[in-house]
Length: 158
Image (cartoon, rainbow, N blue to C red):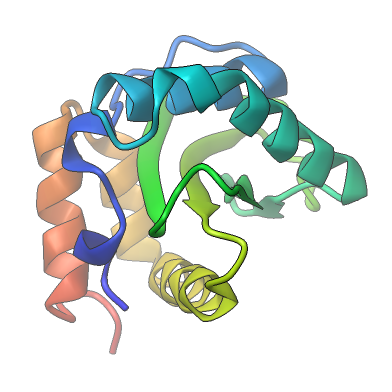
């Protein structure tokens, strides 16, 4: 699975303003709604579902990265977005570090394979230090989209 299969280009945010976990989840979910990737009416229940998932354990996986995600009946296919916080914020990460890179995913409950393949792709790409560094330095949604396309074309992972 490639980033282009699930990342909503119009929902990418290179300049997140949120300062805490609930706010960044809300900001990225609102970006998906603004890009018509999810219905605005479902936004609140999606935010609640993601925060409930976070209660089970932080999706801050370390090295400045978090992958907040949930399964939700309002979507009929996997959707996601990417956000970058220049300052970084506390996300209760496993390594205790601030998070700068966010990959938010929402998948239909009946498509767990897509969800797992997307998580696998994200984690594989994020093992590449160059990819992470370039993402953190991105100044625009266009820059981020270009990096995702390059990752899809195997320009980072050896």
